[in-house]
Image (cartoon, rainbow, N blue to C red; front, side, top):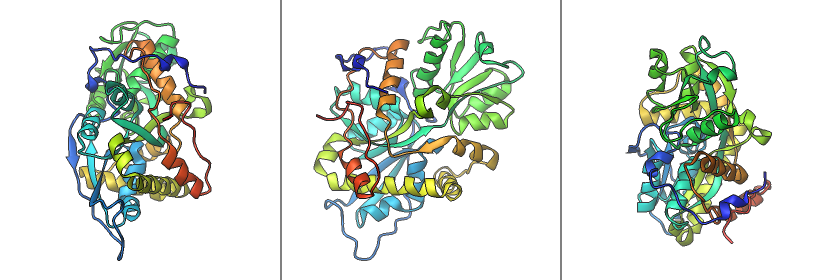
Length: 368
């Protein structure tokens, strides 16, 4: 999918949409420190002379690379005597704020907050340095009220947050049906109900929504309550691939500590390789880390279908990020974003080449 020239114009994010509205598929806006047990090999040395590297991620299955990387010790192994410190976030805006303030150095995050964080800072604060996951987003509905795609018209469908990744995708899908919805209010031919993922299952059970366009594991939680999958978003994309999670870094940290960034990327590539070679063990490891972080694991009837729908990949799928930004522009949630330079895949491609793997492309949006 070629890069779209529409994203090369000067940027201006709509003032009515603060950073909060372009959140990732999270659960609120809090962050939470969770130190993990560190296993440092005897004789290990610090990377770049650093005492620690601060890594952020969400407690979501779409951040499975990070969950497995923590649980199986990939990050600590790659960083040697430099301590891997972890911070868990519930929404994109708080993670972007933490990155901008230096509270974290590297983070796993969704495409919308990455786009928003980049454009809000005039391209000065972050870079996307790698991919992590694709897919894991579904339109699930009450089968008694909605039996076909055309039945969505006139119904109440939840998305996680105004302007978040799934909200943008649903607004774009609505427009493609020829239906009209005001993006700000969510009112129109479909009622778009912005609902925090953590309460969406209760909203569904109470009947206040008829369905939801949501990420995993929320989609599978609704299915466990009797909902049916009406559409898998992957089916709308070429090769059924679209970015759901990327890896970002503070530009200053990338410039000052490239060896540490490379070490984290090596750990991520190793984690994804293990995930794809050992899907059942990886699923169990991710769930174990969710339990360690939140105190609660996912039940099997939610975990199994949710994990199956996510593809873990080192490729950031840059062309699809470009398309997602175009969808936000069409919906009126972004105005003329300039994404040139949002990617720096140099270190990732160095790691992939050393592994004998194929390098990845930045769709013309890389650092020149």
